[in-house]
Length: 363
Image (cartoon, rainbow, N blue to C red; front, top):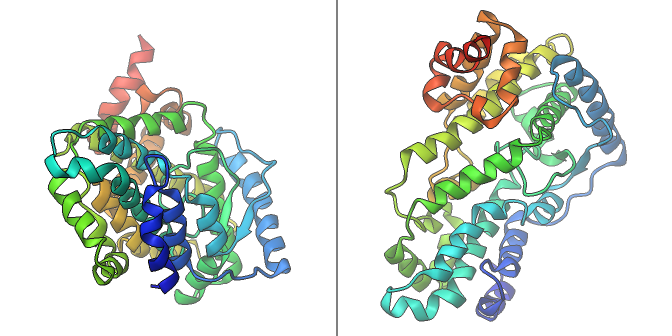
C-alpha cells in the first residue's frame, strides 16, 4: 500500500455522508492499478460484436433489446472508476443502520466518523478486486443503481480467452451476448427496482454486528493491520450479524438465479449457430463461476449474498424445463410481474410454478 494512501487515510475519516466515497475511490484506484489503453481496432470490434449480439438476442427473446447502445470497451481502471458508486444500494442501508445505532456505549462516539470510512473501504476493496475479474457489466449478476451502457472489461475478456485456450473473437461475442441479454432483462420496467427492494428488505431484517465493527475499527488504526485487511478480502467482512432472515435471502438468490438461468438459456439459443466453441466456453464459465472472486468474497462476507454454481444450474434447469413442458411463451411469463418470478423452492419444482402462474390464468 502506498505511503500516500496512509498519509491521507485518517484525514478522509470526516468526509460527509453515510459512505466515505473518497476513501472508497482511493482504495479502488490502488487495487485496480494503472490505466491500460485499449487498441482502437479492438474497441471497434467489440462494438461491432455488440450490434451483432443485439440482433441475435432480439430474435431469441421477446424482451426489449436496446439496440441504440453501442457498448463501451474499457480497461479495469475505467470500469472501477465509473462503477464505484453503481452498487451503492448494497451499502447505503447499512450506513443508515450505523447512523442510527444507539446503546453501543463507547462505540457511539466513533461510529459516525469511522463507520462511513469502513463502508467506503468495503466498497473500494470489492470494486477494486472485481475490476481484475469481471468480463462485463453484469458478470456478477448484480444490477447497477442506474441504467448504464453495456461494458466490456477488455483486459479480462482477452485474458479469459488465452487462459482457456479459446478463440478470442468467439469469447468476445459470447460476452457480448451475455451483456445484451442481461441489459434486456433489466430493461423490463419493474426488474431493477424489484431487486433493490429485495436487497433493502433483506438488509432491513438483520442487525449490525457491533462487536465485529469495533474490532475492524481498531484494526484500521494500525497501518500493518489495515494493509492485511486490504490484501485479505474476507478480513473486511462481518458488518452484519449471521442471524439472517432465510426467506428474504432466498428471495434474492432465486431472483439472481432466474436472471442468470434465463440469460444462459437465451444465449445458448442465440449462440449455437455463431459459436462453434460454445460448449467449451460454457464449461470454462461454469468452472469460473465455481471459484468465487475476491470481490465476490467481500460481498458474501459483508452481506451474506452468495450465488453458488448449484443455484446457477437451478435457474438454467428451470428455464429449460418450463420451455420443454410448456413453451418459450410460458417461460416469458416470469417477466410479466414480480409475482410471476419463481420462488427458491419453485426453481426445483417448475410444475409447482406452472400451477401457480400458468394454470391460475386458465380459470
